[in-house]
Image (cartoon, rainbow, N blue to C red; front, side, top):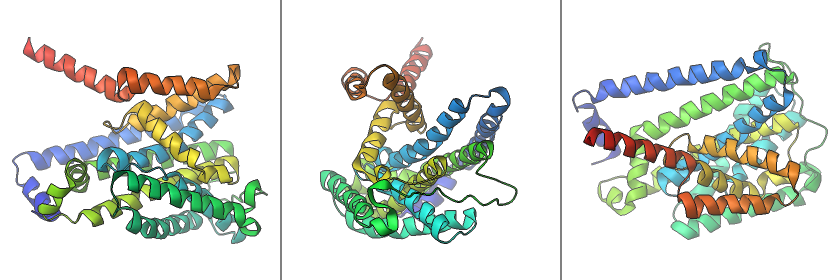
Length: 340
């Protein structure tokens, strides 16, 4: 059975189509409520630090959730996903600095560049299995990072893009205004999460789960496994690039650290903290990691030791992410209640 045939068969199940439509509108309603809450936050607090925290959560949340499309839904553990975060930041910054085009055009152009690069890299990587896939993606990330450092006349080298990123007003939106930047970051976060949620809950998303669980069986059923993996690889790269653009606007520049392997490591760490079995797990992990970084660095310079202890707690203690643990606990409680 092909993916198209599976989708048609799914619509023939009584009541299944109605449930799918309801779930789709439910996600949109939740997204609108979440955006309204975040957008109204400046009305209730004058804390610039809190707004900055939400902007950083938007950038890293898009990145981490896009990584979970590979890790949690497809079974592709990428050690180099951070290259698309850095690629998005640098491409957007360079387009704005060199060409001076309107921000929406630079945004679309950056996504197009990311898609082309991801398609080329993904066509090579997704043919590999497990640890080989992970390390080849890491090799590509180090290649991009080395290119950024060595091409100093274009990228600024180890100093990064200097001089700031121009932010011309478009449609009445002035991203040089901190409140406008905050609202725009929240909008990109919500739109990105909603789009990824639709991908995860679509027939294509369930095809990815089948590939994750048993790629050989999926291939026997007529699914083009290589094409499906390449598609989700490119899609995940686009959302990671969006996170990079948000970060570039936030810091008004781009730096080699955005494309270094530690960014990918933080993405893996975030997914470990929040969980990969639930869609919002990476967002929970993002909030936890940024809170840990901001809190621990106030009291000690050995924040790496503290973060290592936290990793051991989740890996050896809970053996799953926080949101995965909570979801499993509620499921056990519900089953116990039904049993009684």
